[in-house]
Image (cartoon, rainbow, N blue to C red; front, side, top):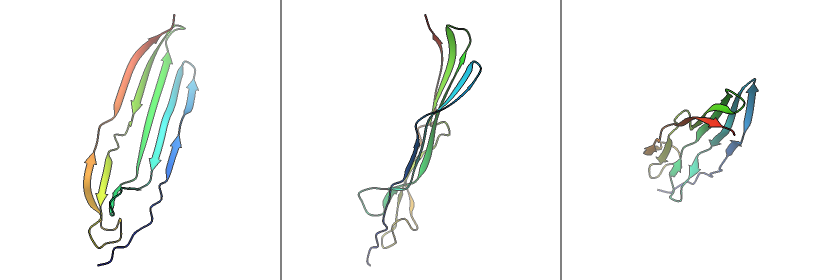
Length: 114
């Protein structure tokens, strides 16, 4: 059976930083990354599209102290690798090959300036 190759194009949307400030509070969108399906070197294997968001914020308590938070992959989007069955168009009828999820990562703390 002849194999058909679907052309892959990698699309990515990246937002490096956006800020919202209201009084003593500041919120930052540190990263928004959308990635389209990404092929691997083997025919029929690819990483599924995903969107990951990083967020941080700070609240100034006094002139010298503030509390902060940072979140990485805040919606806990896993990484999914798919595999196309032999003889099918690449990407059609694909089955899950591997799924990895590392969880959302959060940091909280107090900052001081002297």
